[in-house]
Image (cartoon, rainbow, N blue to C red; front, side):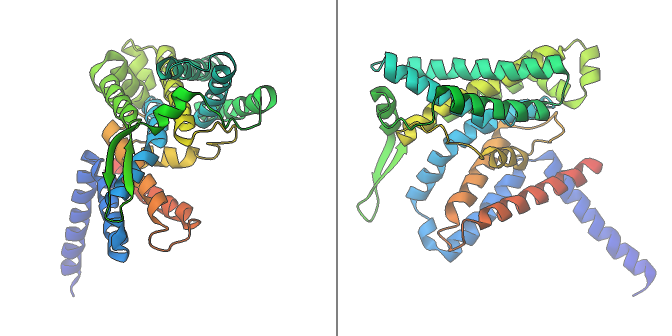
Length: 342
């Protein structure tokens, strides 16, 4: 092989790689779709039991809480920040609201309870936004601190015991089904109605990011905050909004978590931050801010949930879940970094 031939062949390979990375950079939503298809084909070929409607319903049900968290992280990430306290926000809100309702208004309806969760989460998110804005500190540092502060306040001043007898309205809402089918083994397969709350939250988040002035401000500040300020966007208002919105979604997620599991455990949801952030990154959002889509984030959530749920079906120990997720994040991160350099 001559040097000229080698250069020509090398140039063709680089050109194909460049075209591939450029295409994925323009269509980041295609990356999680590709990984979902690969995972489904691999798992389905090893265990045909994977191709059952019950698995689809299980994945959708398991995606609700994680999806609400991920939408909040997406908004903060798009504005150039990073939020890791959402699980502690959800735990504090879900336990406090459940305790209040059980002790003082056991007959309260589900809508007021959801509003209480949303308001409680918004208040805690607003604290994050104020601290980030006033301290001028990296949001990661601030939310790591509030993560421990919220969790410590819950366990020290509110309670550590389980609430097994949750309010009737929360119990009934958690059992409300959207679709009920009977499979070949005569087992009922149910899709819970609270899946619709994730759908509604995704639509609202999409509208905020794509159709409102605050959405344009979020992406502008996440991309180049100094230029955005010169254009008239207020960084402080955007920070207050994104952290409050992330808190609102976390509060609602906490209430749904109690309704779905029929108990309030103050130790729940701890340590689930990284899979949520991984879902947002796999969905195409840059950790440096200024980008991200609701569709990509939802696909990232489904991918993470899929990997978490199907490992047992193919006989892989659940401890491998972390390794597989880490590999996906590395591949996605390196791929988008290479795309950005072009």
